[in-house]
Length: 300
Image (cartoon, rainbow, N blue to C red; front, side, top):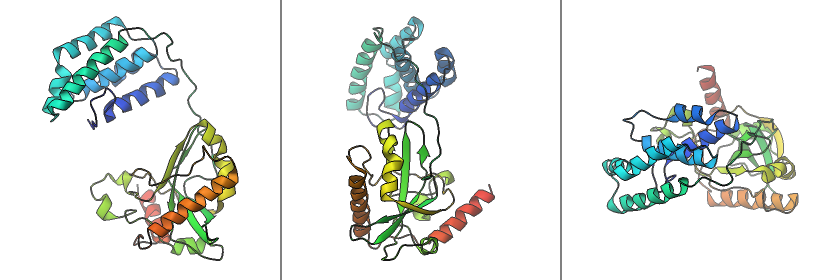
């Protein structure tokens, strides 16, 4: 279930259902078809999280029918959802709060929404020179050169997901791709069996010192312009796949008034990360990591 609080969307399942519902709704799929395909089997422990999330989404778009609303009412009155939470180990405090939240939830969706959400065009994937594998030079605060590598980034016309990992390069002369291949990553968990032994292989790399962020349309418009001012691409590695961790820090594409201010932000953040992790390095260098990931791709 992955619950962290007693609210309707205080668990992974409900949030996933909400995201999937609106993704398909915005693509033009009929609400009834989305609902029917997302409902789970009767004995699934997450079934009520799915049902509540669907009811909320249908209410949001003005298509919550009386039959489904009555089903929600029955579930809440019968306490079925509370029983499942108890069986999964929820304490009395959680159960009481969940009960209150369910009552408020039902009261809310019982009144038709005045201005239902309309379909919006989904983001369109676009190409970017800062794609996964991009090797980017930057300057530290003291003027020395450093290198970051783009991993698991996604680019759309209205939103951008970026993830960079930092190498241990810090040198006076401009680094070359040969220098990068000999370098190590500033992250003890990256490509580490100790950190990844219990994870699915698709999430083989775990990050502690990852630079990561999500940009909406306003930030996306600035993304390449700002990056061009702060970074210089000198080559590309392979796409190293998906990562499994939250962001350690990020670059502020929203609040910087000028590209120069953004560049200064990048310099400060990456200098701080380098100085805070003087002895943190991967055992394998970039060339060895690259070779292993290329081998994995070829043998799939």
